[in-house]
Image (cartoon, rainbow, N blue to C red; front, side, top):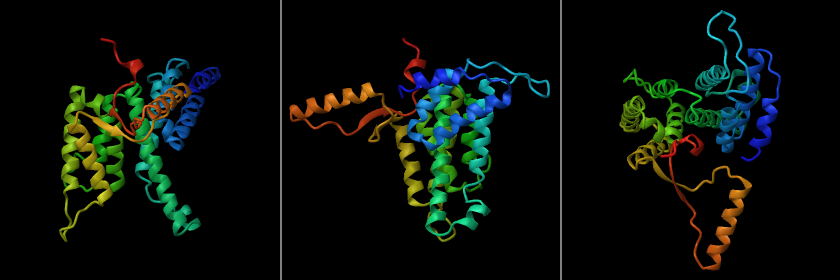
Length: 272
């Protein structure tokens, strides 16, 4: 993560001459974030640092000027729509691959989709996307406006990934509180859905993912994390020192840390 201090100025020094070039810069960061989801927070910090660096450009239709923030929204929307509508491999991919290779292609698409949800969430936490956008995405993923609709499994995985990354902050807002309630009620109903034969509509993996989200929310968005987030070299050295000290005292190093799912970064949190 400390590399952002060197990468940020390099991006900021680019001479952007039009809105198209601005989109290319944002899309390049997006692509890196989606291929390296472990560093989503770092790439979101990079975009946050660039939010006021580049100039605005006149819109071709004479409307509102095109800004860095508006282009971020456009890229997010395009990526979201593309991934949501293309869970299955393309005709070209199906012609090229078969068996395990085709399964790998599906897995890569799903991983990219989940990474996109995580990245969108971190952009929201940095106030680069509005709550209105997040609420619209959440409702669309679970088909809130169509009670009889049966969302695809990957759509439910996406909304769970999104909410587990922003839940605390989103629910702290009045509008967000109501939508989180609606979405979670909808997820509970979908989790318990049965088909004509009396079996569950969704696989166990999706059911467990929904249950984990609901339990995390019930616990005030507090959860144990066994996966390490991206850390600076200094933080890694401190952890190693703590590990050595614990071992010297015969104490086992904790393997999990309790976190609040969906808090804003500390540099955006007002000091009381």
